[in-house]
Length: 627
Image (cartoon, rainbow, N blue to C red; front, side, top):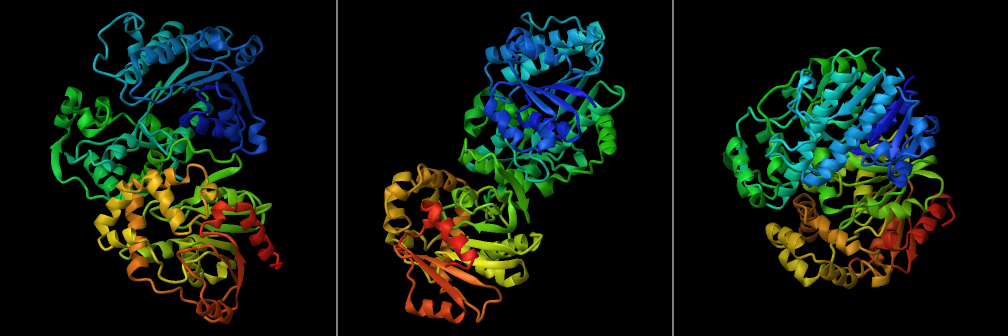
């Protein structure tokens, strides 16, 4: 097994590489600056994997990598080095790029040279990018990368110094016989399992422009494409290079084949579909678009000028990459099948930034929907959120559900889950929840809040064998009474969506939420809740989905349908301070006939969010037959 020194171990690429190295039994020495990020990464591993990982505090910008004497001695145990320690920021200032990227490479190569002199270094793996113009012969060039030169004058600081660092390491390898391997990945997107894409500078730049209505043209020509690669596929190939007995190639172009990747015009149309927007209709040559951006048009489209440089016509020499994929058992990546989750995730990230999630919560995917999972024992809980909400809002409730496993779903078109594209909007959401139940390995305790309660009931009736017990928290029993303003704009779908996108300011949302009895007071409302809802509704995808649901309840919904009896035990928890819905005698009688118990709380509509501890206690009592 190798001892691998990794820079950028907590970055988007680096942490996936670190996890897979540790999983395969290699020893990882990680250069880190943030202990918090390192601890977050460790929490994603098993105990055995963690035992293979050690962090050393340092900084690429400093000589000796800023390491203490003892940490430097640890690094000199390594026989493989992986340099992935450059943050992706295509708008990076040139002075920052020179210090972090190029000077950082010089500090790293000093360590590599020392390992090489000790005859320990088996491989130095440098992660660069598919747009680098350098190849296996470039190490012979005499260019002084540290002096003033005319190379890459049109490029930004990030791209320029990534390329110069590539040339520099190739020169050093050529002169001193270093065992260098360069990996040139394309635009990196989230893993196949979730699509969770942390870097918003790549594909996210185009999505950001589109959702703000600043991308009105459809770039023409099927010959233009944006090469893509899933981060887990890249990590597997890098681990394969680490494990290879000898260096077979110096340069690996890491990207999916053109045949499995949509053209750029097809990609734009797919983005529009997933964002629930009309696709751009004005055809426009990509070459002209690039020139416009480099001549002051970047503000017009809302993307940096060099962001379009990653769209190419050419093909790449993929044989080394494909050989390593085959060796690692990596199948073809049909991008169109995975991109909906990637686009939804990036759309969410562009709305809500810097959201902290407890370290013991893991990202998953169920039936194509984004999910969180809290590990635990016993029959799991499955939590479904309501309108003006997403799965993160129920994390405090999940923490109150004891030692049981808990699943939280983002409903289709909400949060990080892609829309279902069913002809009937509500039917599509119900069937998606039913599919999630079908994928559960065993029956679960299903908890639905508000609109999620309606979905939970309807989906549970389709898959009763997967429902241990059903809990409806403030379900919509009848057609709601909306405020005059919301009822008025709700007559027209386009006007309602525009109102949600443009008119849902935090102050207006807070006022409406209090007036409707969603919360009893401002003190009950989680800090930043209204601001987050407002930002999410700026997404065309999320505001359009809310529009569909609101109009359904305004125009088509009458009351919840209860079968007699339900084929599984069920309970209702009702907040008596709700001003939108009423638990009438008729509704209560229907529940009684269906053998559904009712528990009343002196709380408002959003009590699972405002009172997670109280709600968790009640749910556990019901689960144990004590309420």
